Length: 315
Image (cartoon, rainbow, N blue to C red; front, side, top):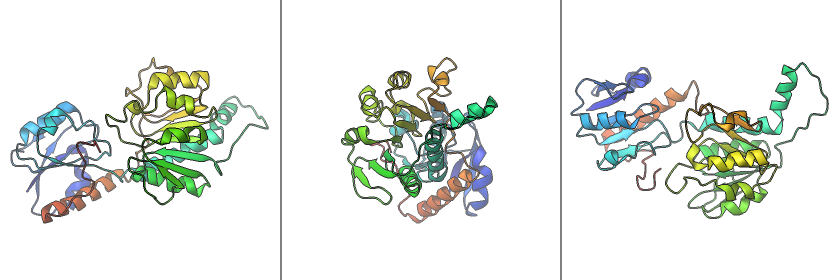
């Protein structure tokens, strides 16, 4: 059997490969070092471009399975990919720990007024009575209760937070006090202190957080997006932050990345912008490799793969 592996994951994956498995290496531009005409499996790299995917698909006519290191796969479901009968599996679960910790950092940043405290330190100013809040007894609404949503819920609950969730097919889940269907979350917005977006980007979720949703939130509420920028109507969000419909937003992802220098989001005092880094961890590549090797063993044994994507649903 032959694999196509990205150059930046060779160090983690190669030592774990079975002895009977061959591989060729592909770079970020889709240039393959070797013959991929008989390759059955493709592990794509980070930040996969459509042009790179097209090159690999053209070079690998018998490809049967593609493993993505990311949980979101909207960038892979291109017309060229969808016309091929290729199983797609994603990296759901490998990012849950670092992203959930990052969400708690956003929440604590807001609750403990860390921007104000940092400003006071920068100005060498000692001020008593800076307003601080507690997370205990706050209400968190997580839109999307997959692996990342569940990890967020577990950590938030440890702080005494009341945790609600929303998913397409609601069912009880550990660490959630309540889970509602995909058409019911809007009714919960007026009661939520924190709203976290952890749902995949699909045609149904583009612009999900629109003007109506933002106007329904409390003036004291804080929005956190660690999913995809296109899920939020960015123009409406900018207006909401400027006019005080909500207290603030922690955004690890935005509609256009990198965020253009002229974007108003950079200078809004109640927006905390981070460069789509919440998933980063020293252990991330190790987890990606472990997931792939487990799936490779399943593939060779003819067993069901983990994290198979429903290409129609988009996740």
